Amino acid sequence: MKKYNIFLSLFIGYLLINMVLMPKVYINATYSGIKAWALNVLPSVLPFMIFTKLLSNLGMVDKCARFLASPCKKLFNCPSSSAVVFLTSVISGYPVGAAMTADMYQTGKISKSEAFRMCSFCSTSGPMFIVGAVGVSMLGSALYGYIILFSHVLGALLNGLIYKKLKVVDVKSDIRQHIQSQNDLSTVIQNSVLNILSVGAIIAIFFVIITSLSPIFNLFPPQIACILKGIVEITKGCSDIAESLGGIWAVATATFVISFGGISTILQSITLLNKLQMPIKTFVLQKTTHALIAVGISLLTCLILL
Image 1 (cartoon, rainbow, N blue to C red):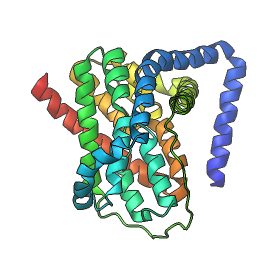
Image 2: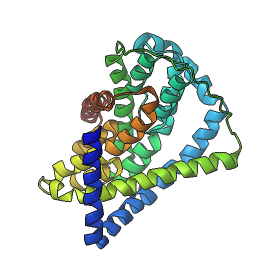
Image 3: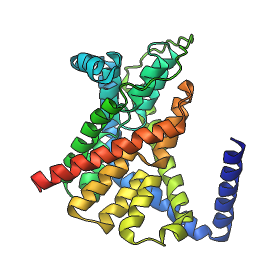
């Protein structure tokens, strides 16, 4: 942990020095991040986030998830409540699945082993980001977006099968929390706006980080650099993928980046999963296998449809 803190401190110092020496470059990087968020993410995600939250608070997600309860028990060795987490994660996107899993563990509804297994298939991106922001806005094709979405979701389910026997030392939490859902429109809008602003801030920060790492990225051809950038931050990576690649390769690489989640999204999830003390290497491994499975599905789907 000390070595990690030293490395992080040095990297932040490196960022601050660069920002002082090249303020215009980093102001432009922040502006590019905000612009990418405002033009690609905000219009497609915010309305969807508000209406899905209302639907969830009204209990409709729980009712729909009942159909998935039995398969979750048989296929993933997880409780029926994991169906709710999976469905909500698929609807809402990162990092909702991780947040719900951690909360269920903290309130004693699931064991630590069950929480670890759930993370393998309940950490997904949302349909409006994949189809709207990436498919339509970036790649210029709704079909591409639907192929990525199908590959991403099916990849998550197959990924869950890999980790169905995962076990860790189990210590159930004695903490109990009682949270009352707020169904009124104003509260839902306020919470959704705060969440989407947080997403925008994270995107802008990681655009700055990508700019600081540009000397490293410039060592690679654009076709490789865009993937490396996507491993750091999804939105920037997908944007560069749309500029550097086309057709089946754009779909496949975007599927990998989205399914892996990017370091920015992984850090968000790990922060939430801190409640169940999940090692970052375990979560990264789960996201890596998810990404590889999803890429295989996307290539096969493209060969059939395109």
